[in-house]
Length: 179
Image (cartoon, rainbow, N blue to C red; front, side, top):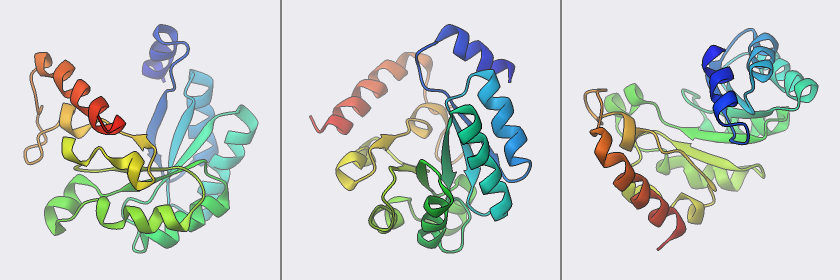
């Protein structure tokens, strides 16, 4: 909560996503993050439906947004539909680090199926490379810049030195805009 409060203090007009991957205590977690200044919280599709409903209830109470993450769902497309029906604002098409390395694949493998299945915005996350940031053209208008900046694809260690971040961000912006 202190980190969210400090980010809100420093960046009063910037969206802040509290990616707690909520699976229990949904209302309480969403309430705490909303009161700290988060604009969006993340609930997991594999959590109990009551947890998802509790997060959505907090959304309505506090005026925050809810992102529903399909990470680890057996049927990601059905999970996305269920999340939308429950009232989330965004669906996250997510393939996790461990799953990617154990089984292979990419969120791009199921992204178009999710985009076609729901009417809310979709965000793809998980092992994407700079070459994958054509996501808006694939129907996923929200782009996460995480792995190329933060973690090496194999060691879960820093991917780049601080000086390369500006170059990578410029490349991402060009890729997203299609330049």
